[in-house]
Amino acid sequence: MKLAEVVEEAAPPAGARERVLQGVHAGVARRARRGRVLALSAAALAGALVATLAARGLMTRGRAVVALGQDARAGQAGAPLSAGVIELPSHARVLVREGSQVSLLSDDAAGTLVRVTAGSMAAHVDRRAAGRPFVVLAEDVRVEVIGTTFAVGVSDGKVTVSGHQGIVGVTRRGEHALVRGGQTWPPGRQALRLADDELATLLVEGGTPPSPAPSTSTSTSTSTSTSTSTSTSTSTSTSTSTSTRPRVSYASARRREQAGDVTGALADYQRLPGEDALYAVARLHLTVLREPARARAALETYLVRHPDGRYAREALLHLIGLARQRGDAAAVGSLSARFRARYPDDPATRAPAAGTAP
Amino acid sequence: MAPPTFAEVYAEHFDYVYRVVARLAGRASAEDLTQEVFLVVHRRLAGFEGRAKLTTWLFQIAWNVVGSHQRRERVRRGLLAVFGRAPEPALPPCPLERAEEAARLARALAALPWPQRAALLLCEVEGWSAALLAERLDVPVNTIYTRLHHARRRLAELLGQGEEAT
Image (cartoon, rainbow over all chains, first blue to last red):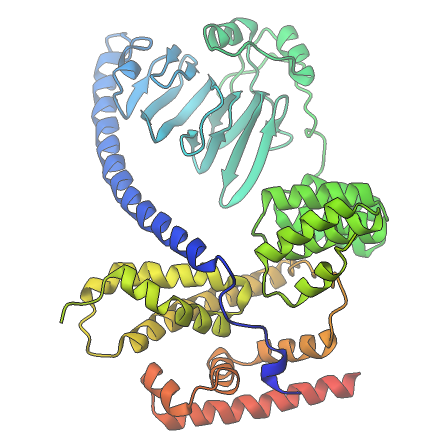
């Protein structure tokens, strides 16, 4: 066998020239933006330092540094936010609790950046356009809001994120997690609860009435505390869907699977973030549990979340296989066309193409 | 003579860069790495003085970008192995003619040190001469011959082991 006969083709596939050029342009723009952000961040940090020093002087005289809404509306980057509810120029509403150290680093067309140094805050954010995120930084945790009501607290260097409505994405050291309404991150941590009056002040004029969130509506109505991670909590109804679960890792899920506990492994994979776990869910449904409908759902989810992921090619091919199994000629055709467009020179392209004839 | 513009370089040499990158790093990451190469080109083109041929300059950028990628991948794979998180094995989704043979060869190729693998693929598959590769890498031609010799011998050993095992 000759080497050249079996190594993959190296000619660029159709559309690669345009895709790469787009990527280069995006990269060049990103680099330019990063330069601007660095400059702005330096300015914001300097502003925050000055504002903090000023705040200390004013606080000794018992006065609030930032009146509700005023400084934020003026767009002062790096300004410490005083306790109360503040409506930002981007129409997000932020509730800062007494004794908390929260500062607004930026709020402009590039998004909103808030830092929680101590205590806790809550926010109500209407759905944002991509590229204009609402981000809260607390210690080494980054909370990115997708359009929701949530709370973030810091105590003794430990960060807690509680979702009230909608979804927030939490990132720490490259690990990502989604926190939904009623959930707390990290799992098992006592939830930061919002009292009814706090919630009301956040949501009023917020544009989005509170939608029913079964797991949180009960708890917020019965809770009268304004517990934060820095204060003593009197809340008793802190049940969350993840609070009692043990910690799971991909390796432990894999070990369970290898030990034959397929159901347990599947449950573990479903709890884990990342494309490996998601693809493992699809693989188990497909090859072990023989549940094609669930396999299909998992594969489709995988392709939505990781269109260029490590298993995207296999996922697409499995979807074609599943469509063929259920005799769905239209799906086979459209998926095969999608595969050929994405992987025009792939050796497997011939196989799905050959099977597309209804 | 004025240096070429980025658009000219891209239009004329995209295929060449893509092909080199795909050959060195594999098709799966070829687009991402080609993009990285052209980002470097965009940044450094103003400083290109024409002392080397443009293709040689581009090759050296591609070589460095792919080399960095290979090192990152090696560290990533090592870490994954330490924590028992070897990448999810991809299922063979459809029968492929000579798939087993190709997979065995791919595994053997992957086991070669990267400079040897690169020399083998560029010379054996792309048909480059050892002299051309030596010029592009700015190394003596005998270095390329040595890499090719070791690569062929190691590949034969690895493929022989595979056959014995089966």
